[in-house]
Image 1: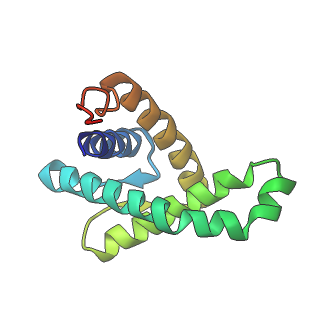
Image 2: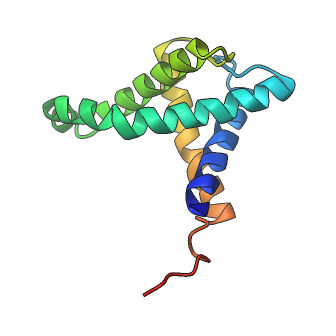
Length: 130
């Protein structure tokens, strides 16, 4: 369970960093902005867990035809969808178009990977019962 929370915070940190770096993505400001990135990370995780596999399955021929590059478009679409759902929940997360979503999804993936690498997965130190 600790690993899941660590990945959630790493994802939220990545979203905050990318929203700060990329002018086409905004996540509010102050305390409300911190809550926005936490909710956005949760929504993005749920979208990636439930909707992304269906899209990957449906677009499998296109993914194969483009040698996997279409997965970048799917990731961008998931970020756009997460932005829309987060706004529907009353938070100020906004992505300006598919181009910013494409760049943002790539940066979020890289930053999340780096932060997870830096802070560790969290489940390494959990005791396992055998």
